[in-house]
Length: 252
Ligand SMILES: N[C@@H](CCC(=O)N[C@@H](CS)C(=O)NCC(=O)O)C(=O)O
Image 1 (cartoon, rainbow, N blue to C red):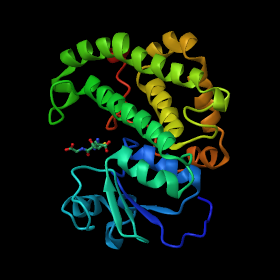
Image 2: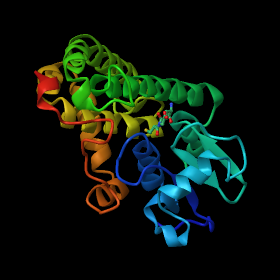
Image 3: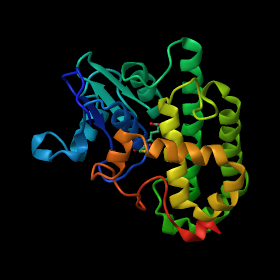
């Protein structure tokens, strides 16, 4: 994280063992070089650990009581905000990750909400019946759900984002909105990362249809701050507790 003029770091409250939805916030903070503390990954003795998240969910940070993490607190203005897309809509203008102008900001937010929907559908491939059940207790339904996701939904979302990129001549088809990268480009990077972990075969099949998306993925990964982050121990490895899980049975 590069130092900026801001003195009080943002506080991110998110599960300490997974990338999950919190990763979309981490990527924005890292790309912007904004100082932040990943609170639940700091020691419990210093106010961190999972207890910090539970405190946030009980309303202990002030502001609107969050339903679920990720939650962001900004100590310099006291803002507390939950829901990934809302967190990013708050952060974007403050850390230089959205263009100026209401119309462009709404466009970025709209695309971010589409990514919210996609994340929910990815989650439901391994938990089609209920979040409180183990994957092992819903394997048969998961296979059916994942097959439909791969065939109908994953392709629909990715082809859509490919079309959005192709239409953005302002950025020479490099970024989704406007001329420069925005937080939704970083989230789209994470979508490709996650799908290539969870559904490598399905993504390989789609690859010829989504060249711009795959280029965006490489472009984002090679941004200096993100390249440093991705190879650091701040980046948690994918695992089978997160949203993108590698269960080979769900990819064939
Ligand atoms: N739409 C919300 C979803 C939040 C969410 O589902 N968070 C997960 C972790 S990624 C969670 O801990 N949920 C607990 C629950 O739903 O009971 C967002 O995008 O932030």
